Image 1 (cartoon, rainbow over the protein chains, first blue to last red):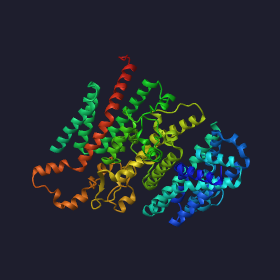
Image 2 (tube, each protein chain N blue to C red; image 1 turned 90 degrees about the vertical axis):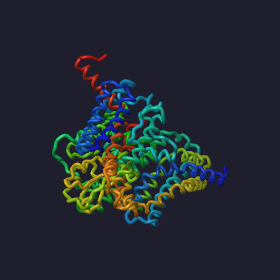
Image 3 (cartoon, each protein chain N blue to C red; image 1 turned 90 degrees about the horizontal axis):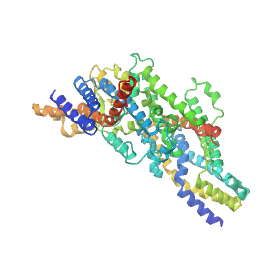
Image 4 (cartoon, each protein chain N blue to C red; image 1 turned 180 degrees about the vertical axis):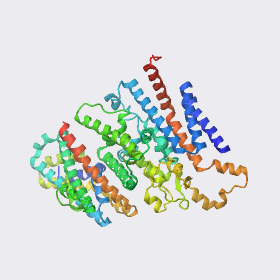
Length: 220
Length: 395
């Protein structure tokens, strides 16, 4: 398959199934953007771009690995492996979101919650959280993602893999446009920020415990 | 007086239609119909809406539970969900799952709950029709007048007289948490294409149906839902005198709060009459009135008001009342003379259209329609169980 026909195929694959990509990303991106301080259209754009860049970096890295391994990688193309990868992604993503939530709580109650200083492992802000959670979400394997990975392993070229994934990623981008409505919603209802921060905390705990540790230890 | 008699007669007809004429007219249906009529007449003549509403909702919740569990044992032999029931989408559609199902359905045309679309009393379409009617009419009043789960909390919150934990200073945070929990469930529903509330958190599995314990995750899920039931439906309502599960966790309640502005009824606080005694805030089971509501003279409870009537009953100044959402616009359009009757006939019709009575009538009608079938069945099972236990009869 030529580079450009593969690229177009990846673009269409991303475009036709982008709803699902957005559905996986929504629980991470929406609370993060809504709960950020001094939300504006510009900040929403930056946070969304950083998150999506993180996702694209993981895509390209996995694509290049698959291209390097060639058809050897086909032995990993099974649902159990994909589920394991997703579980790891959830734990990683949950930890990042939880750390960010603790940072925000610490900032709010500096005096009252000294214990939170110890809980938050590293200092992060919304920007670094966006990149790191994007990297984690990129590990979440869905069927169209599999298809593109398979295309990469067939091509055997790192350049082809990078191009395929950039096009696949670009195909999913239009589905993220609704995120830009969030600053307007928060300006109209400032209470949404507080609600989003609590939602993020709940999502982080769910990712770690219910979508991460329980399946990791107890599901085959 | 004439209005109250007329409304009672109309309610008697509604009760007769839904409880007796649509079912087998035996002694049990007559007893239940009599009970419903007694509740409505007591409410309308004494003006103690909340007291009698709570009795009705608690009785409904208990009888619903007996009927539901009894039916499960008749059909499956246990309360556990079978693989067959899952594959054949035989699980009764629960209204609590509506908010979590809407967006996944809109995006993917997939219903994330294994229930029948039609052909069943608890099928998706019939539940949606009931829900939409509730949204347009009683709004979040559903939680106080028609929800078969809420009655359990109402019952437990009635145990003991003293409020041992005061949630009033935390009312705002409770409301925020409730909406955050709804957002969490909706976003997780989108990401996982399943209702994680049903999978992990629903406390009502204890009184309805649950996944059998076959592995560690199902054991953990059982532990979680039992803990949520004991903490949020039994212990906290006893200690706080509030409906804590309804105010903190229920996704349906949170969604109804958001949709409540669509409904035609709302509770109004007359800020001129209000003396800021805070009795309404203290008794509100849904944390819908807090210190800010009164001090900032907002003129109405917060968005989570479920129109239970507790604040109206307790207000010493009678400053809290029910009104139509269009009352102000109507008064503006028609002038202030619209409510000043010239003669007895006009007065009668104005009294008849008193929002408090109209709301009570429509909300109780909801309760009658929803409760009739399951409650009479529950009563039948309860009596037969008691008789069997006493060895006086049974089969």
